[in-house]
Amino acid sequence: MRQLAMELGTYVIHPIPPYRLGDYLSPEQRALGTPVELDGQVLGTILATGGPPPLDEREQHYLERTNRAVIDSALGAMALALASSIILACTLTRPV
View 1: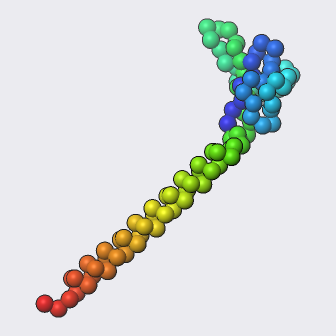
View 2 (view 1 turned 180 degrees about the horizontal axis):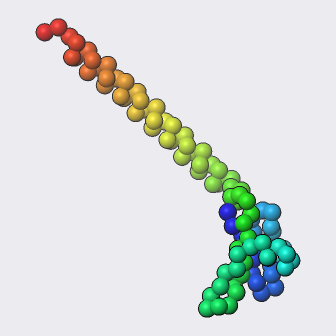
View 3 (view 1 turned 90 degrees about the vertical axis):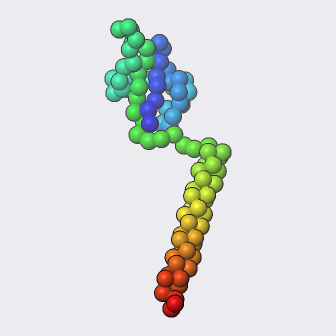
């Protein structure tokens, strides 16, 4: 994940840990980032933070529900495949 720092005043405008909104970035910290330019003018600096931002409670709950739905769907598909394969095997191997 990345972090955007405004060049004007060199403050963080999109907070992702370890940075907080309004943190001042020294020239050494900005030198570690990649400048964002428009028409030759530096608008800001992108800094790598090393990881994704933490999830809030709603996002975490959404991911848990989605994962549960995927697991339930996979189990249901496996049960349906097993049942249909048993029925097909019995039908094919039944004496005529």
